Image (cartoon, rainbow, N blue to C red):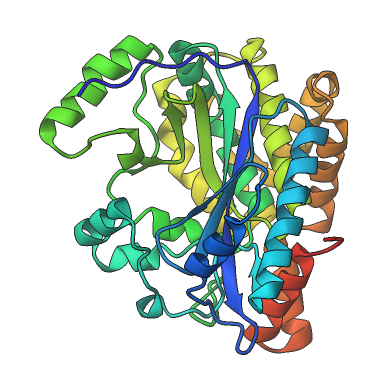
Amino acid sequence: MALEQFKQSAALSMGVELELQLVSLSDFDLQAASPDMLELLSRKAFPGVVTPEVTESMLEIATSVQTNHSGLLSQLREMRDILVQAADKLNIGIGGGGTHPFQIWSDRRIFKKPRFQEVSALYGYLTKQFTIFGQHVHIGCTSGDEALFLLHALNRYVPHFIALSSSSPFVQGHDTLFNSARLNSVFAFPLSGRAPFFLKWNEFENHYFTKMEHTGVVKSMKDFYWDIRPKPEYGTIELRVCDTPLTVERAAGLACYLQALCKYLLERNEPNPAEDDYLVYNYNRFQACRFGLDGTIVHPKSYEQMPLREDILTTLRKIQPHADSLGAGEAIEHIYQATHTGSDASLLRDEFAHRGSVEGMVDFSLQRFRQSAA
C-alpha cells in the first residue's frame, strides 16, 4: 500500500492530544477505569475527541483544529471540566504527569482494541510498560515538503519542549534523577528516535517509506514512534516528545510556543537544516531529559555549548513578534515564567519532599489538574 497523499492543511493551524492518568482515590494507584469513563462520556457531546489508550488506566483527549491560543485554551479547559465531572461520578481521579510515580507495569490491562492487541503481541511486556503519558502537538502544513522542512528545522529545539514539559521524575516509587524519565520508555521501541533526513516528500515516500513497507516492518506512519513525525492524513507534523503537563494551561502554552516557532522557521530566519545537525541530537535530548531546564546543549551549527534555559529565553525573544501576530502573547509569557519558576518535574519533587510520600504527590497532581474546574 502506497503512503497516502499528504493532505494540505491551513498553515500553522494546530491541535493537541493529551494522554491522561486514571487513578484510584483509595490508594492513588492507577485504575483500569477507561471503559467506564468512555461509556459515561459517550452519553453527551464531548468537545474534541476522547479515545482509549493502550492500557485501561489511560485516556486520550484530542482538540479540534485550532488557530490561536485563546481558542485552544478555552477548549482544553472545557474538556478538562467535563472529564473531572465524569471522574467524580465514578469516584476516580484524573490528571496529568508523564509517568505515574509508583504503578507496577505488570498490573496493567491492555484495552480490548485490535490494534492494541496486535501491539501487545509484537512488543510483549514493553506494551504494558508503555503506560506513560505524553502531550502531542500537531502543526498544520501546506505540503509534504513544508512538513519535512519544519520537522528537521525543529530538531535543535526538541530539548526545549522536553525540558519545559517534563513531569516524570519518579518511576516504580523511586526518583529516577531524570526530569523526563518517560522518554526512556519510548526509546525502547525499535522505530523511535529521529526521522530519517529527507526534505522532499516524494523522496521520503519512494526512497524510505516504500522500502520500509517492503521489508514488512511497517504498514503505516503509525508504526513510527519518532520524536517528530509527519501525519499525511491530517496534513501536519506531530511533536511527540512532551510529557503530559499537570495543567491544561501549560499544555496550551507549549502548543503555541511550537506554533510561533514554526512561523519563525518558515520565514527562513535560520540556516536550512542538514544531516549533520543530528550529530549532537541524542546528546542534547539526553541533557533535557536528565537535567531539564538546567541542562547544557550543543548548538548543531556552531557547536557552542549553552545552558538550555538561556537558549529558551533567547528563542522566546526572537519569536515574540511572530507569537504576537498569532495571538500567542499570553502563551509565550506562560513559557517565559516556566523557565524561571521551574518545570512540573521540579514541582512534583517539591511536593514529595513536603508530603513525604508518592501517594501524596499523586494527590497533588490530581488537584492541580482540576484547578478552577467547574
